[in-house]
Length: 88
Image (tube, rainbow, N blue to C red):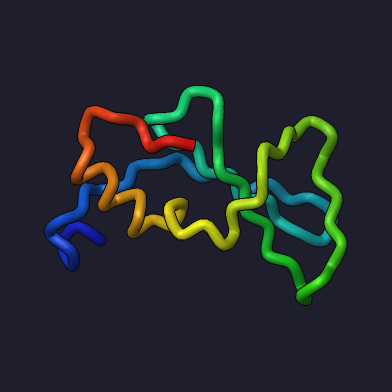
């Protein structure tokens, strides 16, 4: 577990759903500290590949390059702010 490697971090709890979608798999992470937001990941086969999300999914923004949405950053936030949800 990450908290074993980095004692200044808290366990990151989430439920991951893997949904086949065409040639891809949608990986949707649901975190207990967000009630109306999730993180969706799609591995594209090549850089610049065009991808269209299902109409049922509302994308708020692209967070690929936002480090605060990586598990290590989330774990650190939860350690430092145990009673405060991670801001969007």
